[in-house]
Image 1 (cartoon, rainbow, N blue to C red):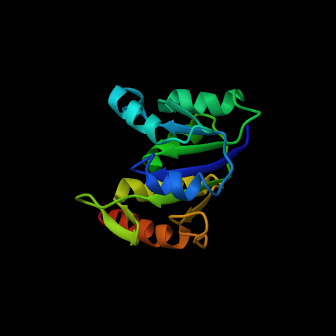
Image 2 (image 1 turned 90 degrees about the vertical axis):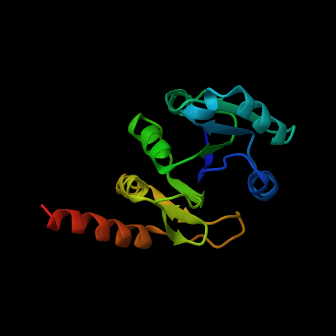
Image 3 (image 1 turned 90 degrees about the horizontal axis):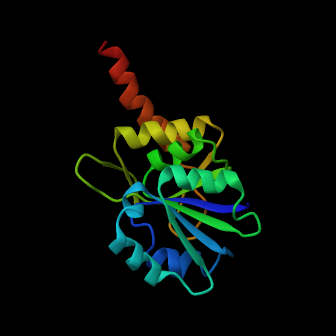
Length: 172
């Protein structure tokens, strides 16, 4: 199954995805990998309303999403995977899913998060998980739209990660 794009975007299915990504990249299936959304019928209905008719929407919890990727169930189709957070991506990788890159497109500000790029806010756990994803050989780029220049954000992640975890080590 060709996974065309894995994207971290805490809003999941929204205008930037529909108007920006789905009109540019050629996918047959959007796989939303989220434990919370998989259990929320209202969210499922709302997300289904936004997907163009020519694209199939599949919503699975993280275990099921990893299994869908591993199983080859959609081998004949091109897939875009949407997740809410780096921990979701890491979970799927740790459970056998295989892909080469991750796009970080929208991690918005909430209390306790700091700005990494104009559209990416992270806390310590996000940094740790992004760092672990990268250590698995996964390319991580930061961009909002597919026509934006790919920005390798690993240098920023490593700098922040080392600042956090180096200070933790010196306090032991």
